[in-house]
Every structure is written in C-alpha cells, then in structure tokens.
Amino acid sequence: MLGIIPAAGRGSRIQPLGFSKELLPVGSRMDGQTERPCAVSEYLVRRMVRNGVDKICFVIGSGKSDILEYYSAGYEGAAAIFVTQPSPVGLCDAIFRAAPLVAPDETVLVGLPDTIWFPEDGFCHLPDDQLSFLLFPVERPELFDAVVLDQDGRVKEIQVKQRGAASNWIWGAFKMPGDIFHQLAALWRQRDGRDEYFGTLVNAYLAAGGQASAAKAGSAYVDVGTFNGYRTALRLLENNETPDEEAMLMVLPQGRSGIPSFPGEGG
Image 1: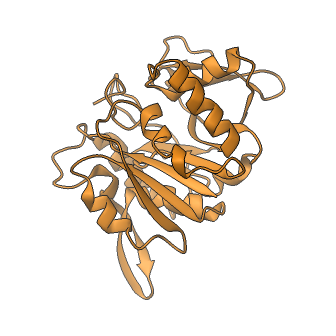
Image 2: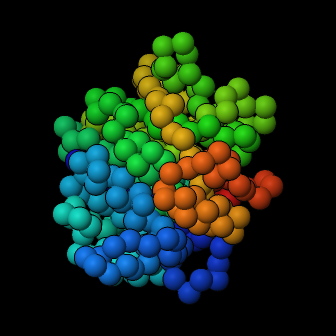
C-alpha cells in the first residue's frame, strides 16, 4: 500500500520559516520516553500508516532537501521514497509524478501534508477498490473543493472553489486502487496536463463514465498553512487530539483555500 504526499508547494502564506512548511512543528510526539516536537506532516503520515501504508512517496521540489533528511529513515516501519517535481505547477502534476511507483493492484492513499484532521482512522472509512474521498464539513465550502453526492453516496460533481457551492462537505484526502490511479493519470495526459486541480480532473473522469464514492466521516479539518490555521491546530491538539465544537470550525483568512499552495491554488 502506497501513500503519496505532495510536498512541493512554496508555502508562501506562512513564510519566512527557514525550512519547509511541511516540517513546521505543531504539537509533540513521544520518542521512547522523550517528548519531541512533531512536524505537521507527521500527522498525515501517521494516519496513512494506521491504514496499512508500507511505502510513502514524498513529492518534493527544489530547496526541500530538509524533507528528505527528516524522513530518510522512513516512519514507523513504512519506507520513504522521494520523487521530485521540478516546478510546482499543480496538484495533479505532483501526484502523478509517483506513477512509476504504483502497481495496478496496489492501493494508493493521497493527503495534504500541511493539514491536520480527525478522526485519525479516516482513511479506514474508505474502500480500497474504488476512487473514494474522505469528506469534512466546513462553513465556507466556496474556499475549497466541495463534493456533491447523489442519494447513494456516489460523487456527482466536485465544485472547485465555486461560489454558492451546493455542498458544505469538502474533500480532505482520498484513496483508490492503482489501476484507477493510472486511468486518471492517462486522462490527465490526454487533457494535456491542463488540470491543476484534482477536482476538475475527477469531473472529467466522471463525465467519461468513471465512478467515485465518498464518506462523510471527517469531524475536523485544519489547514496549518495559514497563521490562523496554525493557532487553531494548536488548540485542537491541546484538547488531547479530541476535537470539540470550537476546534471543529475551520479558521481561514478571507479568500484563501485550505489546500497547499501550488500556483493557482493559493499563495
């Protein structure tokens, strides 16, 4: 089982840090008997490993060798693999950089490395045999990729940062079998790689007869790539990693998305 973590974004919304935003310390973890700072990306890595991931592919850009150094030994038994994205030109481009590593019969998990979400077993709510999205409720879906479902829980449409979105449930992570991953990669190439957003590519996949499902299993989702989000994440983790009603509210500055900052997707 392979986890793909796109980590090539510039992170300009929370710079200057002097290091990659994916290594921003948020909360702490225990290393034996010693408490150590926890990088924000570790929360996603931990959730992937909990679902059974044994290989994690970090897609990094130039100037992000600190991520390689941080995860070079792997994480809790999962091996680390590193792929480069020469230019941060979109989420689809980043994800499909990992295509040579994906076997057709392998389950693939994808998440965003500067987010913290609950429940920790969220990936476990998604089936392994189809494209499926883990959904989270938000107050302002127009800032995200809102997912519209039919009565059977199948995805009808993903509304990418659309005003008046028809759903207040946004995707925060997704899972699929390797053969569907390669179908999506082939479709992206057929469309000349013009899809920066994964949501627009999925809409084309659905229009061509593909299917996707979703689980409304998410309870809290925080983008740590903004200062408001960073403060919210600290409050969330101070509550023993159990979200209360206040922490469950998304705190984002006006006009920004909760998606890592690729060109055309926030700054």
